[in-house]
Length: 107
Image (tube, rainbow, N blue to C red; front, side, top):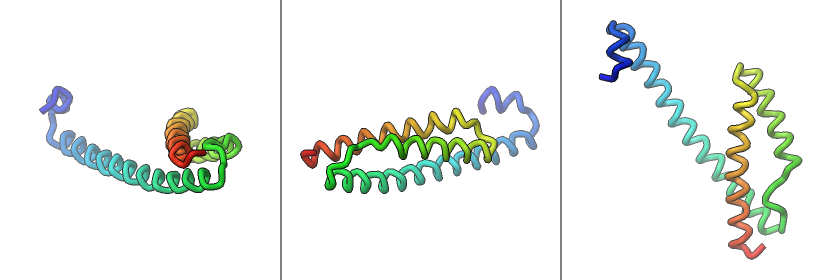
């Protein structure tokens, strides 16, 4: 038992903690699976871009997506700055994949 769990003391509080952590674990698993699906789609986009000699990055689309995600975050009471940082992290990884695909294709 962790120090934090020992400090909670009551079995009701410990049960609530376990329940909440179980929900968090399920959400984390769903996030991983959603990201995996997203990257499957972006890999296909990367191959299409390489086949048609399109650049790996699309700054205009990225700006639109950032604004869209910021609004979604705001509507969901999530910090829009955090949402933007999260999307930027994902987009950088997607661009890296697209660059690798283009290099493999000789583009």
